[in-house]
Image (tube, rainbow, N blue to C red):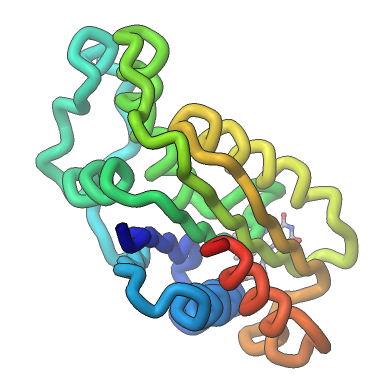
Length: 192
Ligand SMILES: Cc1cc2nc3c(=O)[nH]c(=O)nc-3n(C[C@H](O)[C@H](O)[C@H](O)COP(=O)(O)O)c2cc1C
């Protein structure tokens, strides 16, 4: 069966550094698996609220507020088996757009850990792409932990990750000697 790939652009800056990484990785995905169905979600263009910790999902496994744009995301998260997540570092973590989506996955946490219904597909893999303006990778460790925790909850193996520091102004990523080629290779690798 062909893979279903779900890609998240976490930055509000369209065509920015992390989205360029994402698009390169998706070119790698398409090269390695031309038949794969790819859905790219630009989180900043959707409307969904932060988790309210209302407790509804603890009893049901579903979010009572999923009438917002999380509805389509929940469906895509469930149906997909390959994931590419791209985010800039914002204050030592992932962007708020991405973190808000991740927090809404509390419903999936409840389904797995309270209602004992983990995801049925054992072959789910993710690639995390990230960049930050500072000249070190200290902040990446925090962002990576957020993504790693999300992957555990969703029964996804975090099989690839790339981080580029000193990437700040729009277009900086294109001046990096290897970043876009690295993302392309990582996208190919994800589909192996
Ligand atoms: C609100 C905000 C917070 C930021 N915080 C950090 C940070 O903590 N560490 C860092 O290395 N870069 C930080 N940056 C810089 C961005 O990560 C950097 O500009 C990145 O290349 C933006 O990627 P994008 O073009 O995909 O949006 C921050 C930028 C913004 C706008």
